[in-house]
Image 1 (cartoon, rainbow, N blue to C red):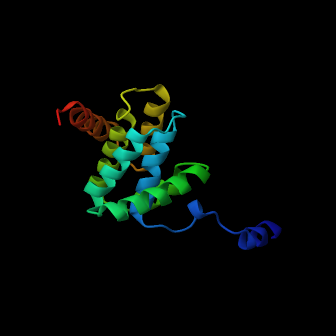
Image 2: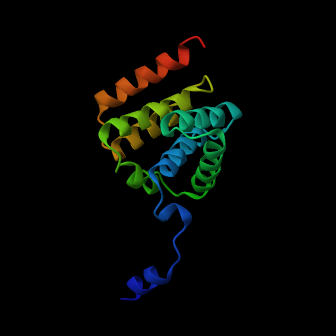
Length: 148
């Protein structure tokens, strides 16, 4: 009984509250950039580009969502806080989220086992299977290596 009362009166952190899917996706992208311990401009630029493309935002809205996502990702205790909102998206869109995460982790030109583990973890939470995840990785790699 005391646990339920305590839970009732304990304020939720922003990451635990309800949020639109685009904020949750942005936070997952920021987490992907942070997972290797280094968050560089090329990664934040890639996240902004993905937000512009995926949600048809203007630059100002993309910057606002990115700022919110960065704040949420910094205080988050796990990806599940964001995947619970993102997994409400249709499967096709969840696969695109995994592709976007790959684009972020590949944007700095370095791959790490920690980043690969993060993508596998999030894909599992979003119910994206290994074949779909591999296809998302291949599309992200093709976009990353394509000439501008």
